[in-house]
Length: 345
Image 1 (cartoon, one colour):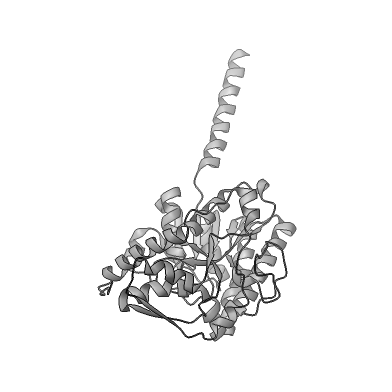
Image 2 (tube, one colour):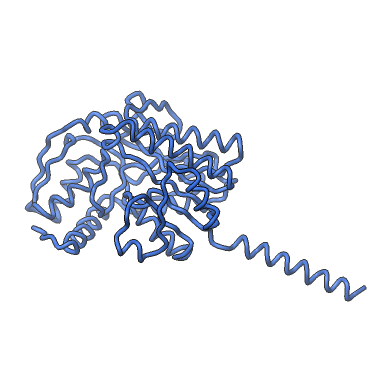
């Protein structure tokens, strides 16, 4: 009898160990639209945390040799549902990070394509996540608000009537994700990002002047801004954006009071940004010639209220405006020189 009890305790111990081991195993993560603004940096960040082989980067674009060698990379078309199913099954995916989207300014130039990529693509990935019980992260944006929204500050829950197809598609994604969570128990998570600033070349967003200005000034010594000097918009450095994404994905589901949160780090105008840059680059010149992107910017939040993210999962930015300027000057200069171009500063 004592022997039987001993055997039983060993079996239970093995079972418990097995459960613990499964729980502690790192997630297998698939990133769609991986060659856009955030994807490559996100993959590097998460590979450092969860292991190189556990983060799969995907897109429909041929990657550079550096990106291909950096970790798993596969072809994935978000409009091909069966192809996505095969990837999830073959690679035993647990988390899906869905970056595929046409940004604001680009989307306005090709609305039918934006509808296909941003809306049909979202339908595919959310149904996929439901079918295979994936944790799914979809970024949203300050562009999900419109001219009827309060702009300073813009709270988490308020009127959303965007006037770009990009913004419309993101509101659609937010509501669809919340619906799937409440209807089917899907672990949907979404952060509304402000303008995300990194050393990569601008990708067609309205806030991308804050990236383009560093590239143009360091290469040519001057920059012509497509927004007015006093256009205030929320921003954050890519380091903070990736840390917010990672911390949010790891947060226990039971502490989240919402499925969609605002996050931000700072708000500034082109004039305020250039004033900080002059301290490091006294020779540079900036001129202003507003174009159609000004109308988009005028309908967006000026100051983002992310107090709910701070309260629920302890979000806190680390990179302020002065640090952002120092980081960008150093990182963009390194990138320009690495690509064989000359810096005037």
